[in-house]
Image (cartoon, rainbow over all chains, first blue to last red; front, side, top):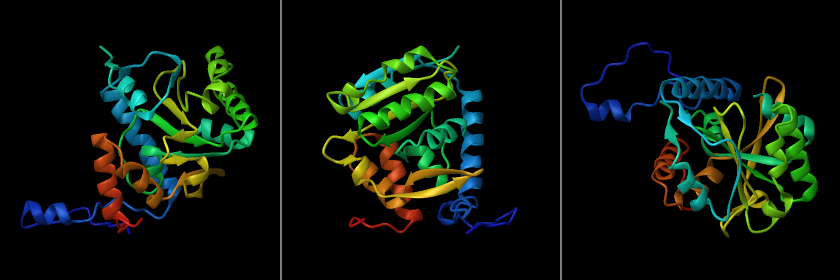
Length: 75
Length: 152
């Protein structure tokens, strides 16, 4: 489903929160993925991080996630 | 996208999971990594290295992605390419919960490239049982958007 209304009106925050995301669930996977890439590119531009380059190995996903938490914002 | 094209060219057997997979299903959020399960065979891991070498112009650190590790004690390997804007979490299994063989997937096409993506239900199953807060949010979004239940 795609909602093409440029403006939607709500009587309350609750009503607004229940409204479907106008961009969610687009049937076209290519368009969805393109939107995902654009969104990530914007995010990386706004909040770049320093990642150590190379290959790192982990015994568990938890170990991998813990390492991710140590990556620092790029100054 | 270039990497996904190289995965296809190399004949890599993989399933995309995580935020990128959610993006294919229309649930867009930013991420810093591309998560994928690969079929755990020596031949397939070699295809992975071959695809990454083409995509990242022979970055020597790719040789450190070891078959012995991925098939042995280190089922999760992170590769951060020289460009550094996106990295790869490459997995062969996730504890007893999931592996390449157990994840339901579907093929999506982007710019003529076929991409194997975990289904919404498979993503929901992966995310609902973890301890990471972002996974709980993702699971809730998937559940609502695709009307999933605890049985999914």
